[in-house]
Structures are given as structure tokens and as C-alpha cells.
Length: 216
Picture 1 (cartoon, rainbow, N blue to C red):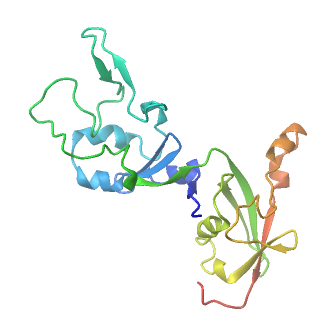
Picture 2: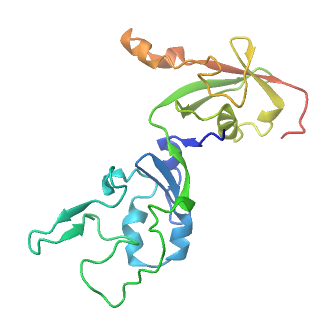
Picture 3: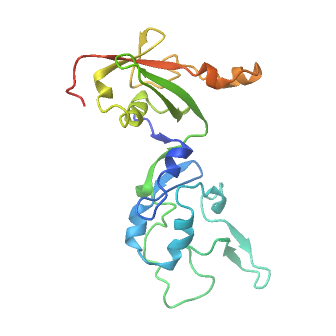
């Protein structure tokens, strides 16, 4: 079974420019950079650009998975609710000769833009390189992402991370399993109940060098 890829809110927030634009909504994470290129210069991109790197779930109805609507008190017609301004693929309120509706699926329904899912909860871990004693704190998903996802995040700190054996509590970790499946439990709830600082009890994963740089 292929596991979905999970992203933390901070990872989404890092993609906050028109050239590299991600948003999250209704639990999904979408890369809208291709949309920016496709409609470059269109004024209807402005609400999306202003929300780059943010969660825009408030724009959508969780039940219909579509843009929220309301009844216009003046016309008694159902209109799309876009308080930040109408955006790409939202039709105008009335007939217009410049409205082209032949774009296919609107971007919020187009799965080609989806790159993963948003983590509903995150946790912190410490990754300690036993060869260099370097320690790095990482914010990771509590969801079902495999440990390989954490390796990908850690590569920016150590390009040879795949050449190490990852261990916790003396046991080698299965990189296709989640942290919980590997026995690295999330103790935040218990620590909160005991009123203990979770930063003082951040679980550590130890990296043991395999003397092989072929996977760098």
C-alpha cells in the first residue's frame, strides 16, 4: 500500500511566493505554482497569491468540497462567497462575454495539483548523528507518513542520511513504517496531563554511520 505524503503547516508556509505557491485546504496540500504560470498576470490570481503558504479551508464547504455559497438578499440568487475577491475558476455573478468556462475541473477539484495531505498534529523529534554529535530538532507529522519522509526532511542537514542506520532505544528502525509503528510513541498527551514540558522529553533517534557514502 502506498502511504500518502504528509506535510506540516510550517512546510506549507515555506512555499509562499507566486513562483513557488502552496496552499492547504480541507486537509489537502496543493502546489498551485503551475496554476500561477498558466494564468500569469490575471487579476483573479490575487486572492490566491495573498494566501500563499496558508490554509484556506474557510473558502470551501466541507460537505460539498466546493467554494462556499450564500443567498444574495437583493436578487435571492445563490452566489459564491468570496470575501477576499473572486478568484480563478469562480464564475462571475452574472453573464459576461469574457468568461471562459472551458477550463475543465476547477483547481480546487483537480487532483493534479495535490501533493499530499496536511498533518492534523505535529510532534518534535531529535535526530542525533553519533559520528559527529550533531543534533537537529525536526517537526514531523503525527499522521501515517513513513520514516522515509523524515529522512527526506533531514537530507538538508546531512546529504548522506541514507548511509546511516537509524535507531531508537537500541533498535534499528524500519524506514517504511511510521514513528509509532517503530515504537517512537507520541507522549504529548501524557506529558500535558502530567504538566511536564514536552521539550524536555523530546524522543531521540540516533544515526549510526554505515561507512558507505554511495547513497549520498
